[in-house]
Amino acid sequence: MSGPSICIAGAGSIGCFVGGMMRAAGRPVSLLARPRLIDDVQAHGLKVTDFSGIEHGLSAGELVLSADPSILAGADIVLVTVKSDDTAAMADLIARHAQPYVTVVSLQNGVGNVPVLRVYGDALLQAGRYEEAVDVLGLAAQKAPGLAAVQILYARALKHTQRYEEASEVLARAAKADSSEKSRRLATSALLQAGREEEGRALYDTLMHDRRRGLKDSFAQELEALWPRLREAKISPARMDWAWQLSTRALGKAPSEDRAAWEREARWGLLADAALMNWLECRPERTPELLAQLEDLDEVKAVVDAVAAGGKGALFAAAHIGPMFAGPLALHHAGARHKWLSSTPRISTTNYADTLISTSDQTETQVARRIREALKDNNIVTLAVDGAMSPVAPRIAWQGASVTYSGFTAAVAFKTGAPSHFTVPYWKENGKIGFVLAVLPAPQDGEDLAGFSSRWQKAYFDQLLRYMALGPRNLRLTGGIWRHV
Image (cartoon, rainbow, N blue to C red; front, side, top):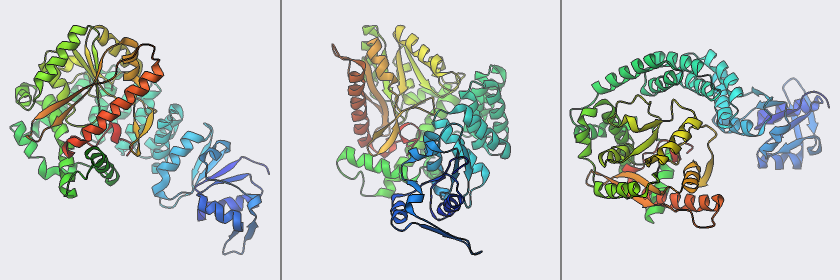
């Protein structure tokens, strides 16, 4: 057999026909297939025919079949033959197992070039193969200049190859074609990172002006007005199912006798967190109205005072749950020296914008340096442990799902000796916002980093599961632990 090695990715009827014809022609072919198909071929061989009278019979010994995606590593060319719904999963496997130089060709029904390029480019991003992602997504961006999602992915790849000016150009064009809040926020951050400060500020000011016009006269009215808008909370059935399962495990019973009502509350919680951020950014002069929503501030102040007395700063380990943006507000009100990590642009109009460490217009190295400096200056640093700046952020298996988890916070706690707390706001039954404040482990004498990190991680996730018992309004259901569900 001669020629480049070919792997049929997802060998069903089409894949078996193509692979069988190529193998009959003497080409080196392997088939990545499901175990059931492999069993059938091994038992009966493979026969390929067409209406013109072509007929080839191949024995199992003449074929290379495997259900293990590592078979992709030996391919020069990968022919994708999975169904459309399985494209994303296959693209992820190719990105993780195939060689960097591999050529990928789609032989799928109902899948255009742009969707395939987008999915494959995104998989390359998540595999940390940024230069290749730029090539693939750049082609997709050329073919679909009006698709904001494609342009955003392309710009993300450019940023990870430190082509900030190019990324800012791509996102600035996308923001003009798609005036959504997401597009304009991303474009603002990219412009700032590229040093185009004036353009970034102008775009951000326009965004704030447009958002301000849509706000109600009071925050109470804002929250009440969310109920007719619940359909705007886009939550996949799989994510909602997992949230129900988590709540059931935390409570030891079903969280509600009325699943539909429970889901309505969960959707409200997602919209409510966005409403809170809208008011913080767009109406900073009305901050006292938001402060009236907060309770448990004495407990927050006690922790703040203890941290200040300790002199090492502290790490407040948060997550993408509950009314996230109430945390910095409470710390600011308590008079804490604090910094908080967020993808919010550094030119945020909130009253505590000077405490922000923006992850959207800085590199990971710059952010890590600022965290260390903040702790040395005895600050509380709040960061979402389930968040990540990089597409290749590590994931762990937790409660039946693959979730993002950064070991950075535990490592910093170990190296600096700074105390750490699980600290997350939550909606109370009375409509006010309270705070979960739980001490996380400190390093023990003679303990190494690996042992401490494992113990800290378990304690963090134990607290996270307990939090799931606090009601559907506090799930939030986007970002962080929810991202890959």
